Length: 450
Image 1 (cartoon, rainbow, N blue to C red):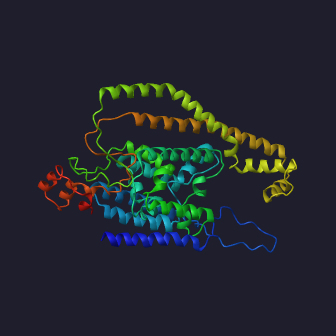
Image 2 (cartoon, helix red, strand yellow):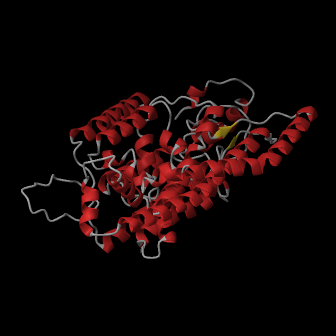
Image 3 (cartoon, rainbow, N blue to C red):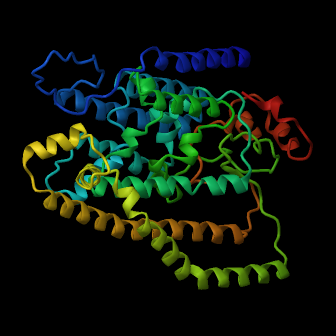
């Protein structure tokens, strides 16, 4: 059975790697068609068609239904098989059928843009896709990540032989999603663009076409995902940051065992995402005193860290602001006016034809750069705070007698359930007496894989 499952995964990986390269010229159409007065022939483009309000509400209904079913499967049924089937459905519906839009991950940009732009009317569908997964996560953990998110589903489908990422490396890479989230909010709030949509590595797979660079990026993520489980979810996804926060506050989070834990160690290597933590050892008094001193130093350095990272962020206002069309256009006009560039681009030609004063354009660009400078202070300080908190967590050793789930990292995928002997008892595979013996003798994990 396991060999058949792995063969199907290999075939699916091959399908994902080949299909996007069949038509690299297909890209998203983001603006209305211009009325050309020449013999220019427009290429055929692929973009999600406009949907009626009824179909949009149908998307919300499907989202709620799948969230409920996945949550029920994880908490009540404790069934990895059901979650896997729901994951396939989400990949087909939200991924290939809906072409990755509307997306809860990308909805961060719409919400941020709406908060800072009064003229923008955010669709109700986008609000629902942004809020509903967070609400479910607040109560039941990251069941959205388990089988609802198409970005996670497409990565989960290609996991063949996951390897364990060292804890120190995972902590370092874990800062990247916070940086990405800060940049997403900064660009959206200033009107510079929706970078999640621009650099989504899997949108080309869902729409069977993307730019060459994005196809290579998506292929790289999937190839990496065969040995490092869900690399985008763990080390890039900005929405995962919000879900992680909600999951840590969740009231009813899934547990590895349906009853008590006997520390049999069978679940130790079952999680490919590193969410299962080992019991902590007793900390000696001398080590505790050394930790207190390090913590005191970190608290003293907190203002220095926040100011330093904030200053670095503010100094990046010029290169970051070039993502904004107005700033980019102003720099191109400045190059042409100074004689450093003799040929005009289509953008500068259109601007000069409109008759708008260049001084007005330069002033608008300066205002945008000032916004990026202020935003850089905020984003930089936020990143500094995250780094400081991670250092604090590295120095604090909590007493934990049993194996436990890091609720922020756990994706509620149900992989670990079948490794627990008490879960085997619940399923009627072994007797309670056999389960009790497993805590006192060494048993290979592979004997208890479902």
